[in-house]
Length: 435
Image (tube, one colour):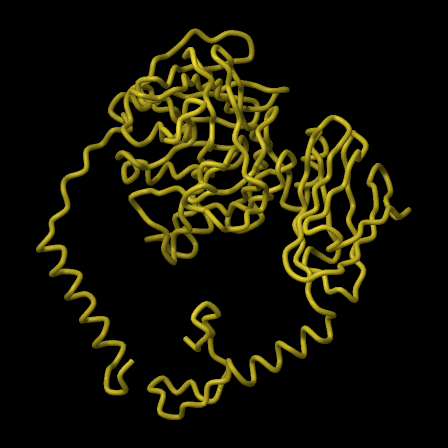
């Protein structure tokens, strides 16, 4: 910033430029496609009440029973999010191609939203809909969405079928998780009463998503996989409203990510190995998640154990100096059949006798530096990944940090208009300079 410039002047200039830009390039009117005009239908389950849009079938409301009306979905912003490109619970995304083809067909039920076809529901299925009308015309996949009960809990399921005569590779598949993190235009009290915080464990087959009211003391929910629906990645959705300081953006539970690894994520290390899958002609595969109520944030692990999910707890955490011992405790109804460390020999995992009441205990020693992935394979084939970050010995790491803060990150420009000198200042590691 020029010494003679002021934040006030720059703000006025930015507002003026923004106004001029808006005046010169008016936005085309956005046409609502969500179908709110068709009305909403109520869907009741043992733990949650949903409001589904009648024509398009997506959920715009997800209210836990006994919550006093708290809603995990952004129901109060439904009219702001009724245009193409905005995602809701019940949407799906994918990239697929005929085996042997080089080009992916990209599909999303929200890109050009249309009314879907309601199908007959039976058994534990509460609502079933054919998504064909809201998917691309050249889609190689036929997808049926089902709101159902799984072991007494609310579930969102997708039956993905290859209806063609050629094998199809699914290179990406995601289930959007658009919970209400829109703090924009709310007071602190309103945000605490209305908004949610979502935190993923990107642990492959053992992955889950925990969602809690922003206060941390209100309703808590665990989103867990149904069948073979690994949380392989957690992808930011490309919506018309982009993330900012008061909106983290909407995310999706990404089951397969190989198509992204070949393009947007090429050369970037992922939490899990990117995968794709092949559907033979006529084959159907079901993906889905369950919505589990948890008594509190502290009871999330207990909720997962009760649901029969693998649970891992690392102590003191997952950043481990090489001169310290860590502990890893696992709880699952199946024995550990295999342990893989990447990079090889970066850490060791040794069984100990510290596990009680069904927990298995391991002592963890770091030998390398940087990111390390631990893959646990259980007797039933379930894979669970645990990611560590290994550092230098603790005393050396703290010494290095102190040296960095008092040299490269130390700011002593006494002419700074904000009077920040002398102090530690933010540092851009990519640009290797102070901010």
